[in-house]
Length: 331
Ligand code: 13P
Ligand code: SF4
Image 1 (cartoon, helix red, strand yellow):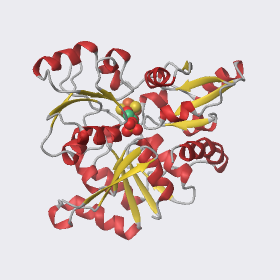
Image 2 (image 1 turned 90 degrees about the vertical axis):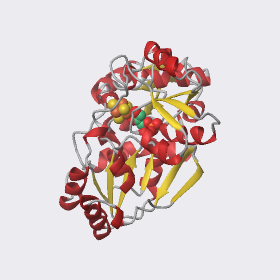
Image 3 (image 1 turned 30 degrees about the vertical axis):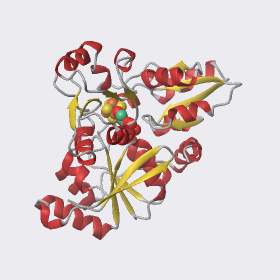
């Protein structure tokens, strides 16, 4: 296993730079991925929900904020983005001259789908006073219609910095939006979208797991519904989950987010037990989009430089301004 260096205080998101494990310890396909990566002068960025094999190969593993910051700073010629489509799109907006590839173009997100740009445009037209704050889980077209972008790692900071003489519109996650309103006391009009995976956790499913682990704190993602948030000991982005669990004195913690997170937590917090929060029908919870990425698809996209993210210059320019505003506010 390779060395790990944790960087702190980068706009509230901590993330980890990994030295890839020595090729001799990897299977054939993983070794080939590392060989092609070197040939392409590529960087592999992976979200915390990716399968363990991809996380273990990646140069950077983190949350949406950490990944955007890495994408903005990378010196690599090719960005290989292992996450979902809107994340790769964000990397392209930040690096228009670089090649950005992803293992599966169809890896979408239910939040992105809930907010089509034409519907948002029509909604904004009815209230020109709206200052639109968009959660990063949205399309480039929606970003282009927004004043500022936020992630779960910086949403509180971004909403606090919003102008006080404007009506606030928060898109597309009603649960994250409601949580931020609770934190900031800033009323916002909330777009009616949600993450299909996180809303599967329920008050009853959490109470059930608590019967077997009564002393384990509950750590939940803010995309969970209020009935789950009310039971949580900590609500935070996936990256902040790592720091919270490292600092916690608890020996066992219940984690209410996508199950890929457990691999990262187990690596970063050896000796602790992580219990995946169940849903009403399942022992743990996976995002079908995040799990579309596999090692063969990762190798194939690198060998063929396809699928690639392609966006018009006009769209890149319009979508970039609100992302830059977020990055400036996140320092
Ligand atoms: P994070 O930015 O907290 O990793 O969240 C991304 C996401 O898609 C959660 O479902
Ligand atoms: Fe989108 Fe939910 Fe999957 Fe995150 S877990 S990528 S919000 S569908």
